[in-house]
Amino acid sequence: MPKKNYRIVTKGDAVRRARIVAGLTSAELAREVNISRPMLSSIENGAGTSVKTAHRIADALNCGFSDLFEINSL
Image (cartoon, rainbow, N blue to C red; front, side):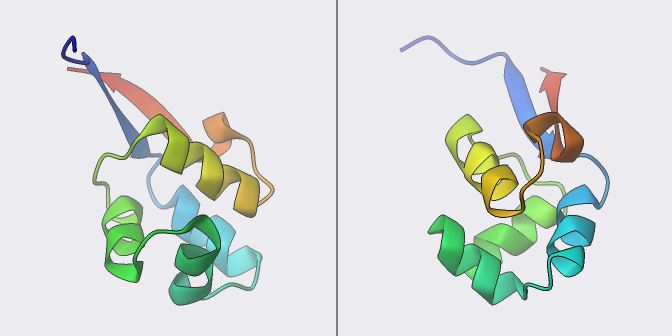
């Protein structure tokens, strides 16, 4: 499998802000997208994530992928 040359990260605190606006706790959003709460916290704090997880988060928050995430070249 070829090594990926990009990293998907949240735009600043966009995921956290969208989650709060949606009225969800981190535990509720994590459960909805089928990841752990610590994993969601890591993503909200700038850890990279997969395309699939980023899209599940954006869908759960009724936001566009590009509103919440950016793709950084490595």
